[in-house]
Image (cartoon, rainbow, N blue to C red; front, side):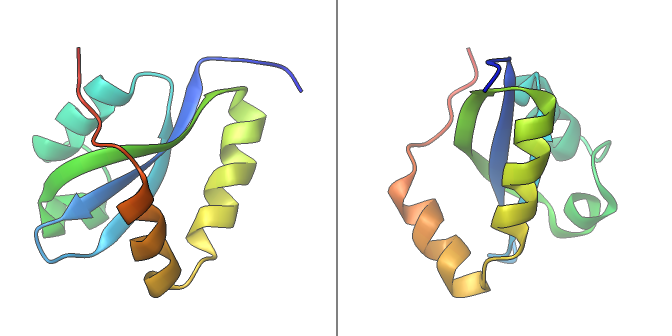
Length: 90
């Protein structure tokens, strides 16, 4: 597996739903989502906080991991969220 600087993240939205995505700049990506410049999903549901599911992935690995997370049930995503540390942008 090739290492990289991509990550898979979950965003908790104001309506308590979770959004999953990938980025090689997670702090900037969360900022974009919060400013309404991200995905339509987060523009409508207002992001509250972000947690990283996986880090140091190649883009290909991140895309595969994102697909896996998106296939989880809402309950499993909430359980995963509960195990992850809060993301703090530096």
